[in-house]
Length: 335
View 1 (tube, rainbow, N blue to C red):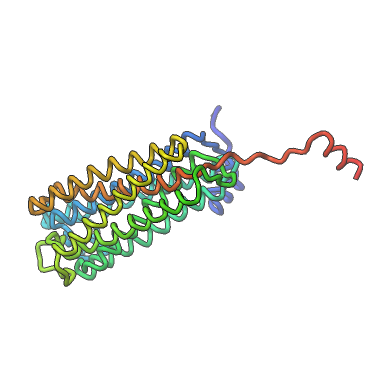
View 2 (view 1 turned 90 degrees about the horizontal axis):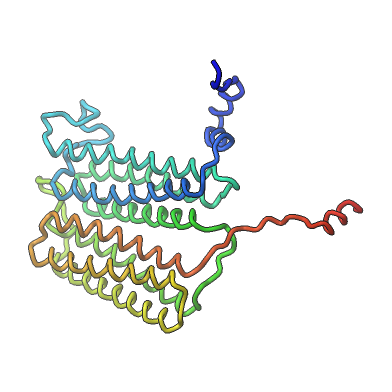
């Protein structure tokens, strides 16, 4: 039939041996496609945070009481398990959507011309984090929602979000050597901001582990800490992050920095303010589930904004190919 490519035995063998190379040899995505693929992986990593929070906040953490099956006798949730089983199993299924998004990002990065090894490695880094975190999620179920494993599960997802954010940014720039846009003192201030944000996330997982939303209606172990005290420590850290962000914005204005770092710092400040409002409202209204869910979404957005601020302090130009000129060619000919 006209228009149908002739698939040879060699093509089949090549596709089986190295499917990524096989696709890359036959498809060249546009830079816009690569950026969209990287963004899709980032969006799905945030969605997993939100749906994972929904599982915990609806008390559906043990809706599927075992892993990797939903029950000892069924791979999927059954009608007898009710809404909790459907919610937990639905969240498990979204992991496959996340895998598909990460897979698309890997394929797009691998197929881009010229080939960018650093971009492909970021895609594979996401893949391995997703795989390891899926196993950790299974362990969370098998140990009955132990709060320490739940905290580790969230921290791993935060690492995934950071890698996805870096890949999204790297897809929009070149592979040349990074050139700083600001001085060393400003870069050090941002590192303090990143460190404080990491500590804020870690303490936030402790607040969750000691708080009332255990993830299931049954008796679930909680961290043996005073929840209100940990919440106050979390609030202090939040104010430190806000103060560092405001100080960074002030310094960037003072040194007349480029527009991008200023814009990223402004975005972070606005997200932090919104997150702070949600945090205080949920604290004084006895932690309604909807606000806790919004706070988890805000946590992911804050972390993305922090990573973007850090990445905005440098630029990476396109690599310039070293093409020999006429004189060089003549020299080569004489040699």
